[in-house]
Image (cartoon, rainbow, N blue to C red):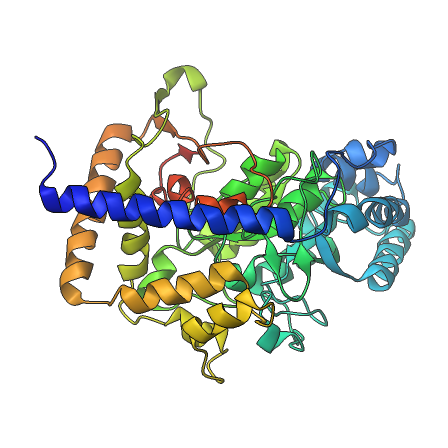
Amino acid sequence: MAPSFTARIQLFLLRALGFLIGLVGRAALVLGGPKFASKTPRPVTEPLLLLSGMQLAKLIRQRKVKCIDVVQAYINRIKDVNPMINGIVKYRFEEAMKEAHAVDQKLAEKQEDEATLENKWPFLGVPLTVKEAFQLQGMPNSSGLMNRRDAIAKTDATVVALLKGAGAIPLGITNCSELCMWYESSNKIYGRSNNPYDLQHIVGGSSGGEGCTLAAACSVIGVGSDIGGSIRMPAFFNGIFGHKPSPGVVPNKGQFPLAVGAQELFLCTGPMCRYAEDLAPMLKVMAGPGIKRLKLDTKVHLKDLKFYWMEHDGGSFLMSKVDQDLIMTQKKEPVKFVDLLGDHGKHVSPLWELIKWCLGLSVYTIPSIGLALLEEKLRYSNEKYQKFKAVEESLRKELVDMLGDDGVFLYPSHPTVAPKHHVPLTRPFNFAYTGVCTQRFLGPFIS
């Protein structure tokens, strides 16, 4: 059936808006940020940097490698590469070396055998990086928001404490987008992160600093979080491994901004790593008691699985808008994004900030300003909530019925490979490929 006249007008206006947004993006591409030639950091030559977290932990437990040598190798790599990619935004090298020395001292005492060490500390001595949005004691915890640039974590987020308790050694915190609400990791405090495979391209977001840090061999395991693709897009763009667990499996406590109410159904903390074999061990540690909800130790035979896939979402220009509305209306107790920009204190006028941004005077990024403006136009109503809630439940039921207990669904993480910097401004709704996979599933869903 042909679309109605009203629908055709709406489509025309949306395309016109997309064209205008594209002009802004192209201007930002020409004028914004540091310029790099199409180049990559130097390749890895240190053998210790080419081992998985599990392999490093085993060698350390067996006393074949000193923990202090592993940590020093990663520090050397970070000093060499991080100035180019800007993935790690705050170091804790001195503390990390002290913790590594303590591991070596403990092992020198030979009070416990290898099996006991593995059971107690599966990641003993393994270097770790943490998304800046998570609390890591003594480190900044701003989520790229200028109003929080002096915020220092007084304790560890739950998952950080669990990984440290498993023996991992944090090297620093990694960059994210402002308030973790954009798929390019750039903000007014730390600047922009760059893709190690080509510095002209983005790292994704909001866990993009973590993604490029792992890809560049500046870390081997890391902590990320995901609502609409914040682990999955950086993993895809940087060629690493990431997993968004089912809601409620891994604790979210200790990150900013923290989801409340119905938002908790979408925000998930998960592992990110350079080697796939580290995913399941990391998840077991990070989940804590929540791991009982999963069956990670159950043997699975690939020949018994059914695989489904989609090449794309059909290309509808309107679909991204629906998915964005769906995400925004899944809130029983809505928290206004503009209030987060002001950190629940100073009043922020999105329109005034847009004018200031055009003059180079705003302390906020253009994606955050745009989202705040969009929020003003999309008024919350129970009618809208019920409408999109029905769409969500229908999609969830259809997929669950299709997958059953032996199905795997393959779906693109993004419609393109890692775009160049600022290009996301020209296609702000491309995140819908991961946004639509933000449902509450316990079955395998690979993007």
